[in-house]
Amino acid sequence: MIGSGRAGAGGAAAAPATSTQLEARSPGAVPAGGAAGQAARQDPQAIDLVQRRDALTARFAELQCDLGGLVYEMAIRNHVRVDVLVRRAAILQDVEAELSEVERLLQVEETGTAGLCGACGAPHSSGAVYCWQCGQPLLDHVSSQAIGG
Image (cartoon, rainbow, N blue to C red; front, top):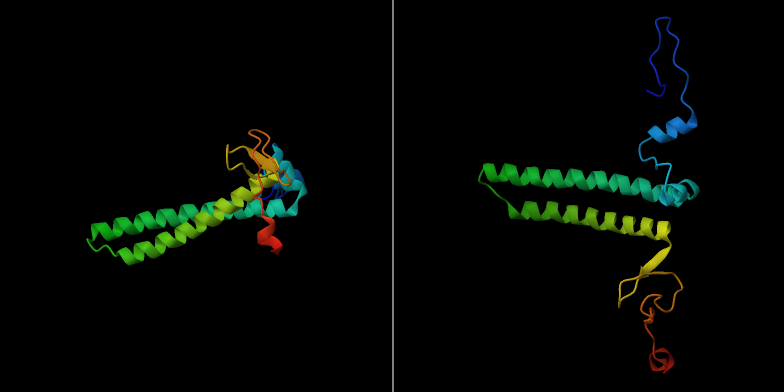
């Protein structure tokens, strides 16, 4: 129901919701505050990532519950088929891996970090050559022999 109230006795419908009200109630809507919310409102790709993350989160929860229910049903019937459980767990792992990647991409967009230092774990931006915290080089040095010689 889009309107904020019910139709009265005379059959008059409530005033239609404003676009702000619809945005706040729509599934997958980004909260108004925070850097992620601002970036998602400005960048259509970020909106797609937020929606994809929400869909994957729901799918992951559903698959996890299904797997638990399947184990339970097999156990109470004393007929556990490990091959079926392994196939279902593999699907769950694929969804979890994709969810992790989408969350990583959202974090990169939100914070502007491109990775973590291998030595100390500090975040760094794209294009950084040395770690701001420990000073270690962030890029692997390629020898001139490996390139041309």
